[in-house]
Length: 182
Image 1 (cartoon, one colour):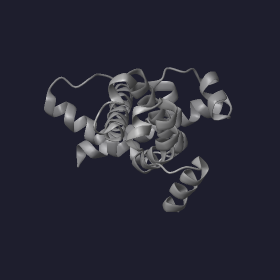
Image 2: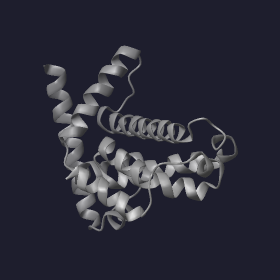
Image 3: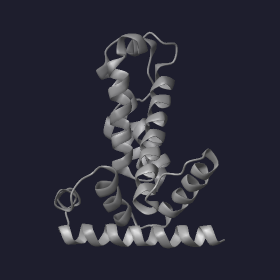
Image 4: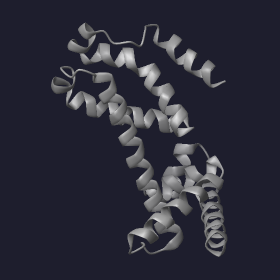
């Protein structure tokens, strides 16, 4: 299924994804068209979520575009794009973990070991939530949307957002309590 997704992304682009030195030296648009399908496919594999992959890809391409005069002269502009994308993904994940930890635990950890343990536990806990619960928590806790706005984004009712976020927080509390007791 994943390889079919990757092929469909490449077919949709209608062009090879390899960048020739001439393309790299040329315009950003050619670079974008050549790299878009493959980067999206790679980020989909990493994130497991198409929307998240698209968001990370947008951040990466924006960053590269802002530095295009320097990037196009690099020996490996594609490698730079992928490093930028992976850094953007890690930054987004860290923000999510911090927001979720604050929502569940209330107070930030004070020492490095406790912070690392909390981050690990929270990462495992988030993986146990449904996609809808994670989405509701991300929109309301991490991005600061109200239930009305989050509902509009997800195409559900505000009460559904409040319910999903509440269920997600409760599931995180249970998981983290069990994890501490283990």
